[in-house]
Amino acid sequence: MILNKTLSNSNAFYKLSHVYRWLIVLFFSYIFLWFIPVRFDMGIESFLPLHIAMETISIIISMLIFAISWNVYAYERSGNIVFIGSVLF
Image (tube, rainbow, N blue to C red):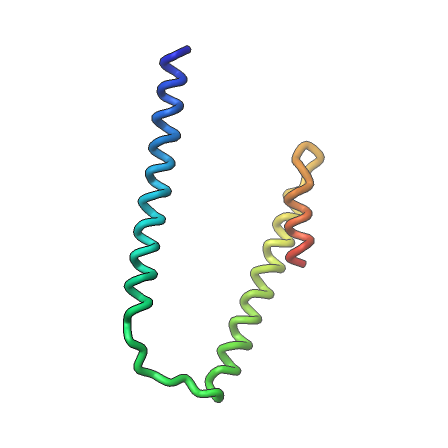
């Protein structure tokens, strides 16, 4: 019993250290990207197609998440999945 608890704690510690490692890498990547000088000017004429494309992609992703969450619902599971899918609809 004690051995299983020790293994469980070491596994949780491993998972937590893995998360901390990713957070540190992402933090320093963000800091690095923040200080890179940007030398281009994106005018208003190129912003509209980019905005429409990104908006369309986000709508498609939201609809896919709704469809998946609607179809995986079962009475044995909680209703949180359907709630999240409905919010994204």
